[in-house]
Amino acid sequence: MLKPEGTIYIFMGMRYISYVYNYLDSQLKYHFNSWIVWYYTQGIGKTIGFSPRHDDILMFTKSKKFTFNLDAVRIPQKYYRSVNNMRGANPGNVWEFSHMHYCSRNRLSHPTQKPEGLYERIILASTNPGDTVLDPFVGSGTALRVCQQTGRNCIGIDINPEYVKMCEERLAKPFTGFDSIDDRMTRVPNDLNDPELRAEYIRNHVKWFLSNHEDAIPEFIKEVKAKYGEKLKKDGQMDLLDELIKGVKKPR
Image (cartoon, rainbow, N blue to C red; front, side, top):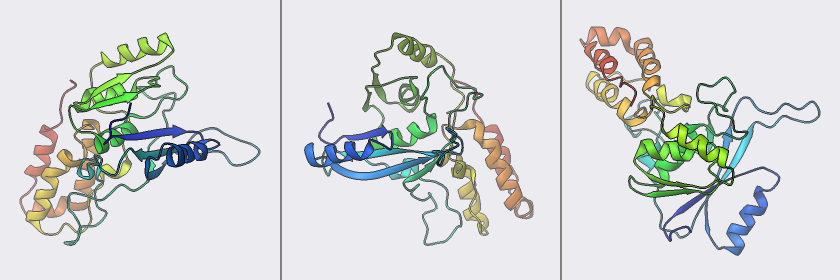
């Protein structure tokens, strides 16, 4: 089903993922791109042996020509340097997103529900608006929800009719921002000392990194105040914070 220029991501338990890798590589002759590690701080507890704290995700492409939108998934730089891309850095292949805790506001009755921020990165990186995503094991509907909010089409398949109904109900709910985020997305680079560069960065941060995470904007504002509050006052730039506060969107 994968188009010639398409990308496939496979979530698989660590006991079997090496077999899947070998099949895609040697049997299907797909092109290996990345072995992604999703790290989370809470998970299954073990008393004999070490408790697992990550999932593996394989990224393969059908050919050497494929979509990869790096700008759509960059993370803020830790420091501002003229040699760095102000737009941000590659997020790397170790991703930290919180597990879907049972107390989460978006938690559904599904045993392996994935956080939306995880799928957001995958879908933004490997598709463009209007493209079609296929999730043949749609489960709680995370892929459908992310596609719905990012302008992609999505086909979801599941053998369990209860999960299909769950997906329909989830898609009908108002959107207030995805339920998870890479914590690095709210950080503000150190050493933004030039007033013009600082203003340019603050004005663009939400558009670059938080467009689907309105509920994270207050944390970003807090970071800006902590690092640059005095300099903003000195340079007469406090209106930048007012612009951010007014820019917080209402549920849609």
